[in-house]
Image (cartoon, rainbow, N blue to C red; front, side, top):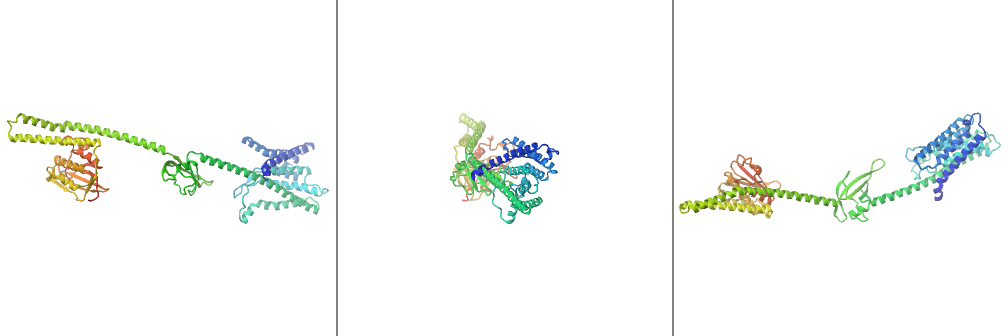
Length: 597
């Protein structure tokens, strides 16, 4: 069966080609040997055999080139239509032969024409009923003459009927590979009737036509009955021949399709496994169908697949973290595309992952380098600003006490004997005051150097704010005009020494440059912060000074606010200024609040 199926297509088409050549040669010999009839070649049925045979040969001739193939089909259809035209023209003088020739010519022209089924699949061949009608006429012409040779003449000459029968058989064998594939029958009576409708319709029609045509020949009842039986048996054999040839041809085509499908599947699998990108194929419910070798290498999975894999972002995708089998994540560039079916509905998804771990590492290193450069530039700018501030301070505030000390000391030394005791004490007291002032400036400078170089570290611990403020206020001159409003359980998370210096500088700044009374308040803010407010009752700070109040050295204001800003920032806080109502200046320090003591 396998050997027969393997060669049935080529053998069938070769047989059809031979039949076409024989019919064309027979038609040429019979037409020209008998001479041209009075009605001309157009009215002779045998003349139609020449183009019909050529058309059959052209229909089965294999042509590999598509352009030449289309030309071959057009030529075959043209010759078949010529044969049909000759058959139509001969209907007047040879009705039976003309009808058979016309039907055969149309069948050869329509070999590849099908009527589509409403349920889909391969439709019905238009050529089949035409060949059936031609076969009935030819068999009616042949069989009664064989059964009753001495009976009345048949519907057409015997040699013409034989040629037409060869043409019909050749047309049946011309398309052995166009039968529908075998498929399980559809359940139900209606489905069975629908599938076998052509046979159910054609069988009684063929029987009736054969009976009517044989009865019209005028032969005896016995010969008519035998002829009808033989004709119906011959038609059944022709149908069986067509079925076997097309079934075997369809089986061969089916094997070719299976082999082609298997080859395509192997190619697709090889292509999937050879891709450098990790690929995962999922069904419409996101269940994993298949993955490639790179996906297993990237995720660390062996032969097992995750039941619910993490999905990449839809659409064009983007950066994603793909979980590995060991619990770690690998950065990937992920995309997911839907796989549509014939109706456009989603039947599955294909996800692609590209390993971008090296790119991510390079980006992080580049970002870190850019941050280091930016931080270095900021530090350089801050150092330059700090240098300018120190230069201004040394030029003004430091020079003033030194100059005062030098002048007073010179006066005291030069006129010591002439100066009264109280004047000498006053001059010495002024020298001591300026000396202490200069020492404080030097201490402030030393602290600023340490802050600027980053050697000052804030050891932050919960510090009771009320205790620090009261201690600083008691040690500061003019503290009698200070009003303190702070809860006893309020504590700041800061360095105790830094907090003392901050409060001391803020209080001295308010007493020196503002006016009493000075109000110190503190309270908790939303978000877990603490707000310390130091407010005086003076005229406030001029508007032209505010932009550089904490950022640069202010002549006559000392280094207090400059130190305050550095120490507050070292403790993770911030300091700002605002106008007090109805008058005065208010300095606000924000620090992290510690849990209640």
